[in-house]
Amino acid sequence: MKRRDHRRKLIAGNWKMNGLLAEAMQFVADLKENPAPEHVEVALMPPYTLLHPLHDALEEKGIRLGAQNVYFESKGAFTGSISAMMLRDAGCHYVILGHSERRNIMGETDKVEKAKLAAAWSAGLEPILCIGESLEQRKAGETNQHLHRQLQVLKDAPDNAPLTVAYEPIWAIGTGLTPTPEQIVETHAYIHEVLGDLNIDCRVLYGGSANPDNAKDILSCRGVEGLLVGGASLKAESFSRMIAAAADVAGSNS
Ligand code: PGA
Image (cartoon, rainbow, N blue to C red):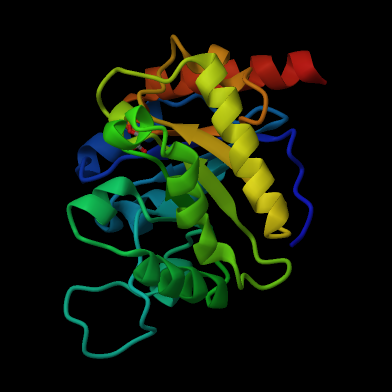
């Protein structure tokens, strides 16, 4: 695996199933001219329908485009599915894989995630692989064991394959709850350790109820190299404040 510039924080907005064309255009218009400062990378993952319409406007503002999912087959009779090459064709750099909503609501398994990773890499996309424990698993002391298992999909990852991992505790997603800084530091350290054992050096994001008020504290936790932001990425004002928080933290670390 290629060594990444870990100091460059990534702020990635996951719009989930939100956003119509007019709202998306308003979002971009409301963003500052150059919202991505030095040391901060910014990305947005709108729904498929907004990938093409948003591409040029985001590129102009230095924001990378990503998708929220992909199908693992490359083409053919798979009605309703979108391939990795189609995402590349729409100008995507990133694709989110293994989000807990896809695992829990759509029943995606680690086997499916592994096939999607391979598809993403073969099309030149950078996957953002989401992992995270349920509240029951955390309470039972099974967090590390669960994360370790989820990370095994990376076992045969090709050398130099682009990759970001996002730690998203399921109980923190959309709930307003976040782990304590100690829990974040501890869990990120464990994830980096498992990645190290797999000979993978990649950026690890935090996700789950990150917002403009807690962004700086979370980004200051050791081992946190960016945020995957759901609800707070839907408005340009709150998303911009989170980018500014990342710039502050990156600046004070440089
Ligand atoms: P949230 O979602 O920020 O709304 O909690 C994060 C995510 O699911 O990626």
